[in-house]
Length: 411
Image (cartoon, rainbow, N blue to C red):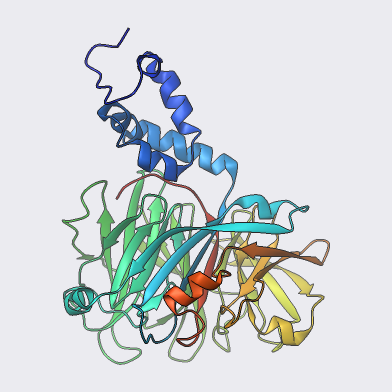
């Protein structure tokens, strides 16, 4: 017997008679990509999948399942016969298991450039990196990136893309995405420098609401920050966005943006001279802000993991590490973050020009040993490479994040 008022649209009477709570429980166990397809089978399933209660329940399960790797790369610095593309892949959290030797990555979405996009890019925020997640950050299931001169917020699970509006300034240093867990709200922080490299620094904030991505606007916030230039990717931990920056005297500093209060403050790193090393990433180490320092070890065979133990007092602890690999091999890798057990993850910075295996390194800072996990599915198919000109159009830069979660939320 069918329930009154429910549209079936081809579903069977048997499925239609399942209690609503059980239907929601069954759907919640499915992958996010499957749910994006199932929501169009009937208005009833759409009402369940797009309800905030279901979205929150799905994300809670996603947190319990563990994070995934998010892998993005372009198809070259220049193109001959193919359009420029930005690819988003993800791989499951099975890499956190010590017994895992192989991970399989799946293509989630692709952003393709076109002449129309290039012509309209002047109406959006200007970016210094046309195809990059280099100065972006990953928050829950959303990633902030730049593409064809515009800043975008993307959800690889839902394939939603939100283009951020222009800021009103000619020079935009970086945009960072943050999440306030108390008010359940996403905000983007834009840092602009009005003149020169170390001119007047201004910060603007944009609130991202559910389903209202067409009416976004920036607003200025009052802050007393001294001149600085952003130097690292951002990371959001417990409602605070952090990113590394440098001052005119080349001292390094960590900028903190409280997403809820919209207040900005500074944290002093354990040592402030010499600036940030190229490729430095702030990371979430077991719930604490951390970063890797290789300044004194040019071949990266050794590094120091600095961990922020007390935010108010700027107190840091450190772990000294030595990688059991040859320096020549390490130079092609970058530190991308940590996994839940606390292993430091290193990944290649470029795709190989030929069909070569793609390996990720997991370093245990306690046992001081390293393991290699082969990542399959990352442009390791000859047909895929030929179709998109990979290996023929210059370097393909790879940017990876270690704490990506399946999220079906819409901004």
